[in-house]
Amino acid sequence: MSRQSLLEATLACVARYGLAKTTMEDVGREAGLSRATVYRYFPGGKDQLLAEVVAWQVGAFYGDLTRAVAGQRDFADVLVETLVFAHRAIEEHALLQKILDTEPERLLPMLTTESNRLLALVKQFLVLAMQRAPLRAGLDGDAAADYLARMLLSHIGAQGRWDLTDRAEVRKLVETQLLPGLLEQ
Amino acid sequence: MGVLDAALRCVARWGLTKTTLDDVAKEAGCSRATVYRAFPGGKDALFDAVGERELTTLFAAVADAVHAAADLEDALVGAITTVSARLQNHAALQFLLAHEPGLVLPQLAFHQLDALLARIRAFGAPLLARFIADDDEAARTVEWVARIVLSYLCTPAAGMQLTDDAAVRKLVRSFVLPGLLQPA
Image (cartoon, rainbow over all chains, first blue to last red; front, side, top):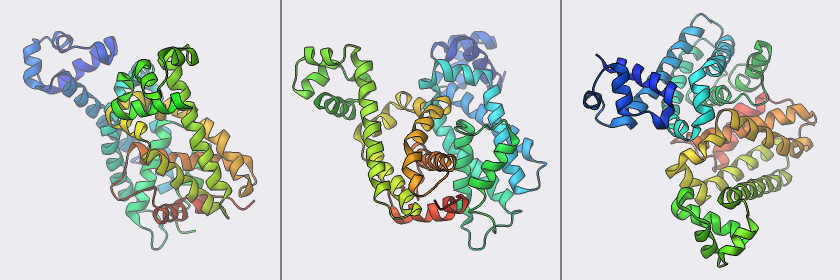
């Protein structure tokens, strides 16, 4: 028995009962363990367990994202594929959508901590990808990566007036709002 | 209106969950019956009205800033700094973000954010008509700038204050103006 299998058991319980109703007993039963054993792994109780499940899922999302765009050489293509992939992943994540419908007040505060971490990860990833781009002379790379990471996460969370399932539109978004300040004109 | 201001003061003091209509009446110096008569829908209706009033007030302040601007850069910088300063000094909102985030973050994320962005576009695009002739381009710009403000509201950065005119001007010049089709 590992921490990971307890995280998986928790995810199964959340899918069935929701965030509010899932208990440590439920997780233990799902994993075939006593409540006391679950507490031994997660002394912080349900809050710790749920926080680790969210962190695990956000980390997995970030891993999938970097793999999805790994083949792209051109910086604009990296940004287009990032938006298309991430938007689709979120729309198709049945459990995430269910919780956003039924218990957003419980989920979103947990995602706040994660969004700081995700912003830092995406920034790091962009700094690397930007090394291959023809950047404008005198560009503050850190400020640019911060701006880009914020815009990517904002659009991934809510597409607003854009249709992020349409690659042509996504390319227009990238070419008009993400790149003009960064690249050599 | 006195009751709405009183409701905000209660939230700033002890949050939304603990605030009752009795608290609001006491704070407003009126009777419970007066509050119940004004808001037959109860606490939810009262706070819906508070939210609408605050959004309207915020929009009015942005409109003033944009009307006073000489060019597009000043309009965008004025809008961003005005909104940021008002949000930062909004005691009730800051209490909610710090202590009851579950009651405010859902409005600022995912599908509910789509709805908020649509309202912001509908309000803001006509304001920019002086600087950007194309309606669609104006709507795009408004949403873009709103996203910048909301990103820093929900995920503040240590080294960046959107209330700082010089810092915002640099951000707008570096990343926003180069991507805009102007002028009107």
